[in-house]
Length: 413
Ligand code: ADP
Ligand code: ASP
Ligand code: MG
Image (cartoon, rainbow, N blue to C red; front, side, top):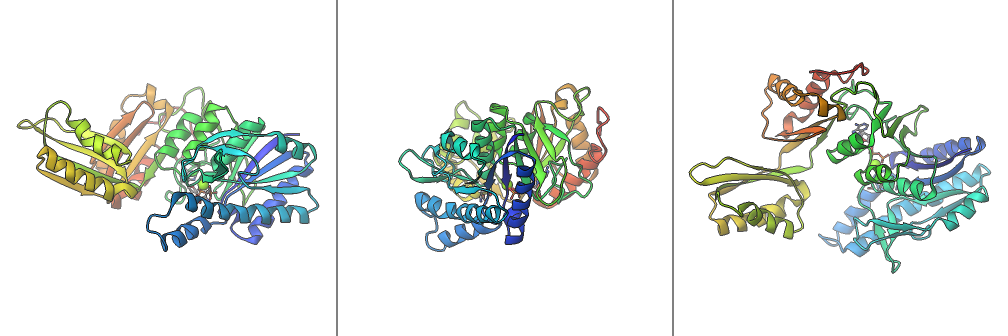
């Protein structure tokens, strides 16, 4: 008998038939003697629909009211799933985030969980009740409804599993695990049996939205056994754990992530003197814009070019700020491009294998794909390229690093 937290995403609860199928799956686990806490998302498309309604009234909706609105999506699915469980003869009870006492800070739209009171949940579980909890939401200390950011139900699932010391947190979705890259882009992508927290965190941060970044951080920090599985078919899915697929000889590259959500800004011809980087990026961060990659060129004639990337949602804001900075610094011009994509190779094995980046650049060159920016860390190499070559780049890297073949040891492109 195990205590399982099972999270079902939007597609998995996207219709009454899908909700009934989730109830069947929960029933099967209950019959095996497991205790179950279910976390659900809103029905697929619902959160976007609600955002659209808000924006039709206020271009920049009030953040507190936005959270009141968005939390309703998940409130619908907890009630419907509880009814479907009761229909199957199970004891079930729905809980919103505040009812289950998930306390967060007050950053509406990106609230962080501070505390979860497990007493009430424990007594329900002792009584054999299936708890059905609304994902993505909590309440601050004054009872204001908060939400945890897009994809936040994953974090609710992991946080509940950590608080309850569950045997496993199972993330049920519309793919049967974590793949070497998004299987919707590369047909030959291969499901991984296991992936390390470190690699999964990097994949999620670099654009693989199969798990919300914060849920992976949380799982790593509290050592929550985390598994990604399909709600459509049975299988073992992918276990996110401390060791990867092949502990003896980890291949250099485990996966490829990509992201269309960035934009690039360049300030040309700024004086190459100490303090310039902070004069450029200071106003950008004061405008609450997060910067991702930063590159400064070598100096020519005492001036340099300064390039950075931001989230595409912040593109207009960042461009505005930069035009002001350009005047102050007497820069030659501001260049900007929001038709870019970031493609990254990820793998803990890269640490011990030189030449992985070179193999990546060679594979891209063979497709005549121009690299605009590069950034590296111990376990990833990212490049910025023209958005229109993104899928080609992902497919060619996937085959160059032989990711479609089962791991046999070291992979060289
Ligand atoms: P849910 O609604 O269940 O939370 P998401 O849409 O958030 O589901 O995440 C599942 C999707 O993640 C898949 O449909 C797939 O297209 C995408 N995805 C991106 N990268 C990967 C990857 N490396 N492995 C598996 N799925 C991925
Ligand atoms: N419903 C929210 C969203 O669409 C949270 C989630 O599904 O995880 O982002
Ligand atoms: Mg998701």
